[in-house]
Image (cartoon, rainbow, N blue to C red; front, side, top):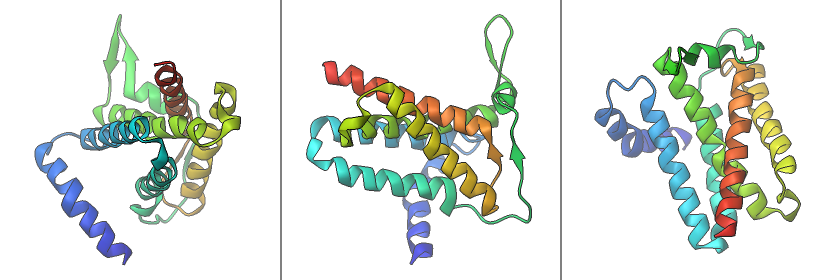
Length: 182
């Protein structure tokens, strides 16, 4: 069943995106993540009754992109130096410079992946109406994903992924606060 769903997902959604952006070096993931975030936020803004179904779909999508599409490798690897991947993605030469498109797109996708998390948490739970509550929950959720990837050999444990996911959760919370005022 999972293979059928995965095949349909690729046929319906990913194949057209890769066809449109064949040389994107990761840009297609950013486009998909951005589209997913915009759709999630629009649905949340206009119909608050759909909060829980959206949260479930979001959770499934995050698990799919971070764990289920990956195949187990032979060894575990971890990158524990903070900002190492970020420094490989962008640099400073009087202005920001993209050093590696692939690392840059992965960085942006990691941030965008957790924007709905930061928006959904205060929408779903009263105790999460403050940034200092959402921030550790975002970090813990990201850490949980990274540890699962590490122990199941599904990818590289990268502390920069935790940092960028947590930043995404904070951005989502700020969007929540901004849209709440309007």
